[in-house]
Image (cartoon, rainbow, N blue to C red; front, side):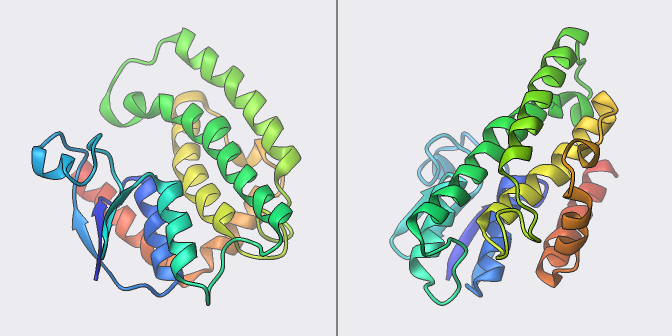
Length: 213
């Protein structure tokens, strides 16, 4: 059985977790924080999460793991068969990560860990966020899913980017991503109807509550 290392507060962990559930792949969750302990570094050389241990050995980096899961589970496909459309889904996934996730992540320390967010940092994030959301608006389809008619990995990546990112931008910048990305509200409602999304979110919310308590 596969082992998924990480913890439910991590949006990248939840991306892989949802993909495993959607594909019906059995796995064991091993609660793990990022670590520099030698035994974990043997699995994840930078000590990052998530890490997925499969029969052949460990795998790191969310995009790599998602590609692997696609390759081994041909009955449930989250990439289009057409090469160009497949590339467009990957383009949207990478753009979501670079222009939204990594931008909003700069606010993480201030929102969750009490770090001081300087006005200069907030201004930089606002500028990057404005550019990023404008770029994403050119790529998102919401027809009804992120890349078009079908549920793809782009939906998984976008969902766990905006649900965390919106928490950060609202608290630190008073910016609601639903206002910046037209169509996002209805899409979030659609995703929220997915029972597996509900399961992942319940585990995430329980972990948040435990951290806050």
